[in-house]
Image (cartoon, rainbow, N blue to C red; front, side, top):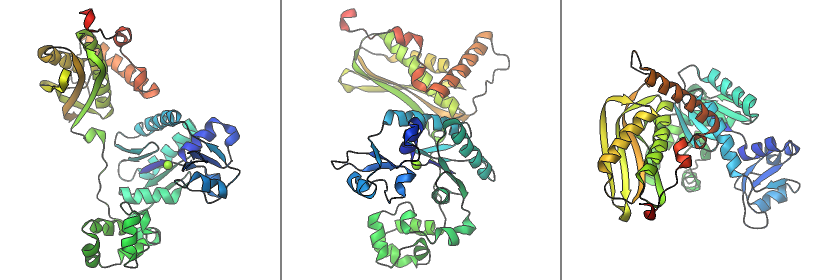
Length: 383
Ligand SMILES: [Mg+2]
């Protein structure tokens, strides 16, 4: 399914400032300069305003619209809240943009899940969202566009001639103005025109990629979701703004990076067999050193312990300029395999659960190891 918030920036503004509700609202650049509309509320769309339109033109069409420059920090904050709702439904998510994501759910559960997500976003965040459900990305996206605004819709392969074919070819992914023009030379304007056109002359003129477009026109799309937990590795790194000479400071940073990597492992439902440390010295010499473990790990402390050991063995001569941790060699599952965890292990697991809940609720920046807060990097003079 494709989940896409409706007029996202404008909707957030209307949420935060109720006086804007029901009013045409333009979020975007300076109307006196070359600014363009980034998002417009549905009230403004009634006047023919569209995103990417010059702000000046938008105001000609809708002179009484409220114009706002927008607040990206606030939109990102809300986007994180949306993300958490998505993640409560499935770990299989490809985030496309600040307000759009593909979610994979088990076959035949799509419509029910779509309705639930729609309702959750409405109830928890009071924002309009549209959800399109189908068997592939293309049809889910079109289903979503047809459902908009604030609705849940499906588009199944057997409905392609009726629903997809009347649309302009610009609705297909990979067709921009250039390809559009080329296809128009063959008299192709709608998806139906493309679907029914013989492929060979199109390939000769446009190249092999037109084969994919032709498949799209028939509702066929083999693109996979690009998801984090299907990645081969997860890594986090920090570049220091100044030379670091103090190993204690490095340990504090390693703890933080370990927490970030561990969180993402658990989020993806995976554990890692190999931990790699990346270290950059003065003069940009960079090394990576790995350690493979007898058992896969996913806990912050185990990652930290391994990374710290690698650092202690390979730290060379300070100063250090960058440090990073990578986890790889994934296996599915983050269940504690220990039949009888020691009290210390049980405690660590409890702490992880609480930390993850806090991160889910407040975002990763909120959870910083106490040590880092009190640690300041020491300069050369401190040694
Ligand atoms: Mg959107």
